[in-house]
Image (tube, one colour):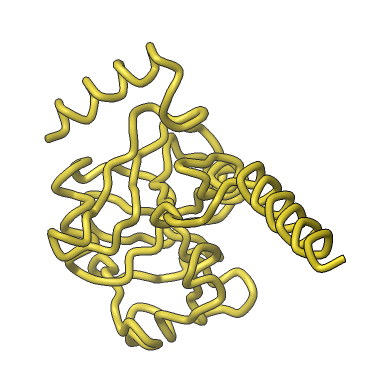
Length: 201
């Protein structure tokens, strides 16, 4: 599947399609397979957690802005690993505002707490899911951002330099007319109204 994604990425790059700035075409976790319809990718990028977050938010796919991945279930994490492997990179988790209060930064889960405390803490919130590695998060030296490393989460200093991040895009919005279509529709309705007024006169 990964080879397919890479080949698709090459084809889309040649056609000028795909995701601006991304390494390959994002892969959908389809609803038919039990997923959420979101798209995922791994972006090679050297930078801090804040740098990666800004870069992710600047990317888009199918009209949806990207964000550092929010892994809210074991199934979602298993899907990601199945497609991209156990890559190392930033994810959207942090406890920057309040030590031990781990939140998702962006996406549909923005601001939602998913973990309380350090390594002896517990999963919390609507999803009640976290995948910290052994002894994590340990806040060793003030570590306030999360890395996906080898299939587990690790807390690191937000100023650490990593060489990639995991990105997620919401499902594409379907059934919404383009702005031009809305404009034409509006003009048409105005025309019909004017015609009816003329017939009554």
